[in-house]
Length: 237
Image (cartoon, rainbow, N blue to C red; front, side, top):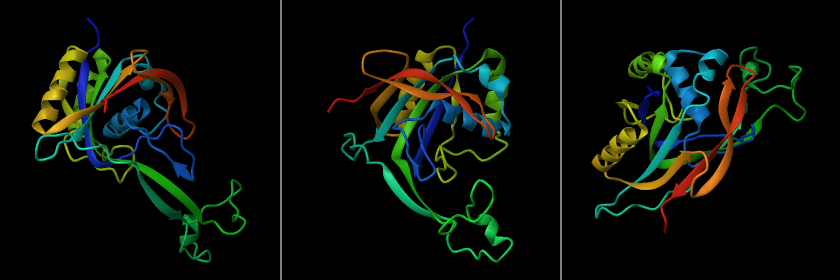
């Protein structure tokens, strides 16, 4: 019997799914990454290590995403909101003579004061007012433990960054096939008066094919990833 699927509903005023970011500029894709979703599951489990064996069980399994936008009072889809850019100063306003406050000021790799001061300017990008039905194939032997973790998470769950707090229960059921999970996601979207915006399928299909480096092989301080191809199909017009 093939591995079953879980339906995860990711909805929040702000979400951020980085895949190619640097410290000073933290971008977001239009949709959740596989590394982000599996990281969310690790938070639910309270797992903060490398997790190489656990991640290996998920690496080749399917993940599909369907994105939904709100409808207006007439029932028509609202246009997608642009990415929100948030400007932040990291390490500013701290007294470098105070032994505690100086710990919050960025240092060089040798732990010394940075030339010109330790304050860093950062730009962080967020997806606005979207909901995603994530159809995630799960190793059969991990279904029960994964479901329990999502229903009773050890750590707080968030959608990409810690300020992206979900506004709906993430776990929305288990299904034998991807088609059943997608149908359940469509029903939930209709209940929430949301309209189709995009679909992300694993592999090459008709649409825009992207190569993402978002299959995690190792978490922890020294993260490792490998590529996968996805196809993005968007609502025309």
